Image 1 (cartoon, rainbow, N blue to C red):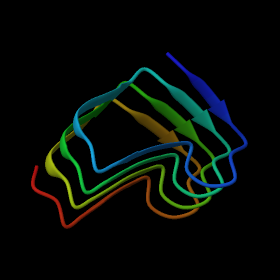
Image 2: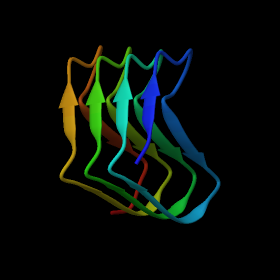
Image 3: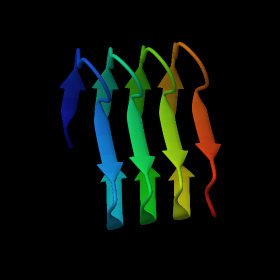
Image 4: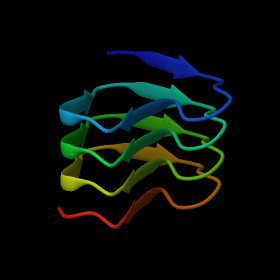
Amino acid sequence: NNLVENTGLDGIEISGSTDVDVTDNTVNFAGYHGISAYNSTNVLIDGNAVDQSARHGIHGSGIVNLDITDNTVDESGEDGINVAYSDY
């Protein structure tokens, strides 16, 4: 469990990775996306709380096997959850 607050960009970022679980974290006031995953395989984003991210609360792009479950997203600047160019 991690607490991430007041970041300039993403609160948590996964990029070019395989078999990643992002679970039970709290992200507040991210300067871009709360949690973002790019160009990765087998990503689980589960049980996280994201509050007041500047863009998307949770964002996934270019992911093979993306699973987003049981998260809470509040007051995102754009979409709460945004998935593009992914297979899930």
